[in-house]
Amino acid sequence: MLKKLHYLDYYILVPFLLLAATGVVMVYSASAYYVRVHLGLAENAYMIRQLLFVLIGLVLIAFFFYFKLSMLRSKGMQLLMWVAIFAGLLFLAVWGKLDPSAAINGASAWIPIGPLHIQPTEFAKLVVIIYLAYMFTQRQDQMRRPDFRVRELWPPLIFVGVCIALVFNQPDTGGAVILTGITVIMLFASGISLKYGVGFSMALAGLVGGLYYGLSKVTLSKTLLESYKVRRLVAALHPFQMAKTDGLQVVNSLLAIDHGGLFGVGLGMSSQKLGYLPEPYTDFILAIITEELGLVGATLILAGIFFLIMRFYLVGVRAKNNYHALIAYGLATMMLIQTVFNVGAVCGVLPVTGVTLPFISYGGSSMLVLSISVGIMLNISASEKKRLEGGRHA
Image 1 (cartoon, rainbow, N blue to C red):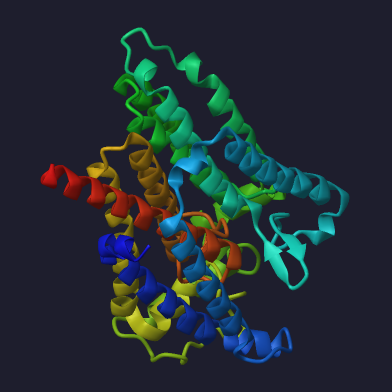
Image 2: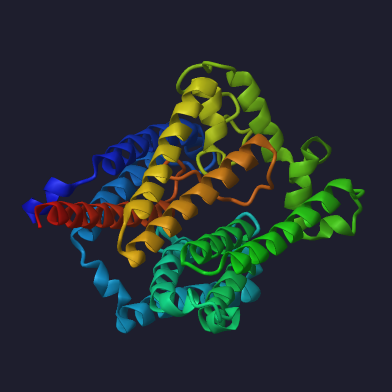
């Protein structure tokens, strides 16, 4: 076990530790007022919870660093993961219909277990990545044949499609888009013919782009705004026209960014977290960071996240094991889309979807999944380093 530490990738571990520590500090700064005034809890309540999630995450990193990744390819493990995920997503679908009042921020996306709230969608991202890496690796040879037809991939794609539909139904548009993006990128990386990958991606981009453009031009009618999903999208396009309803978060986020300027007003000195920006420690924590630490501080944090994402991609590019490479691409894509969606929502250029900022926002499910991802990537990086070193000595 100690010998494997020789291959530890510090370009992954150190950024994670720095980002996780920053997240704990910023969760405390963003949540202290809110939890004391609105929830009647101690000011450090959410900080302690976030710190606990990080500590559990470190245990998960160590576990998956030493874990035999080949076990994830067993049919038994694949079945177990999918049964757990589908059970969670189906439970939410049924519960959301039976008890609509249980929805949080308009979505039935959390399963309460005592004081904790488990978010199956976060774990579904990880399961989809592991599943597609396995399925595409199994079909690698036939996908590269000149006579290959996309219909040969329908079984795994339909399986993932059902998962995406269940997530979209919560409604969790952000989660559904992230799962779709992961599927597209992993499909590209699997070795499939470029014409199929480009065709599928262009069709999807055209559909989303056309919808976005069309909604940016329509009149804000009462009928249109009856849809929760449409209201969120229109609020991103016309935040100040909906400042008293769905545009409230975006408007206050933009005010926080403007107030922070280049160097910020100082750690703990944000005014927008004092009741103006709802739940400022979750998906809009970047607005508080920008207000307190300025554009410089926010840029440094985002640079750390993007450095980690690019390291994941680099490990995938260097990997000789196709299964390892696909997992690396999937995990990197998950973090990339999540970061882009979060930053876009905070800046008012993308709809608010509740997507958290990786490693920084408050959230147990997100932190645990990200920690497992880091552990798996450290495992892959170590395996590839060991293989390379063995090749040199051969």
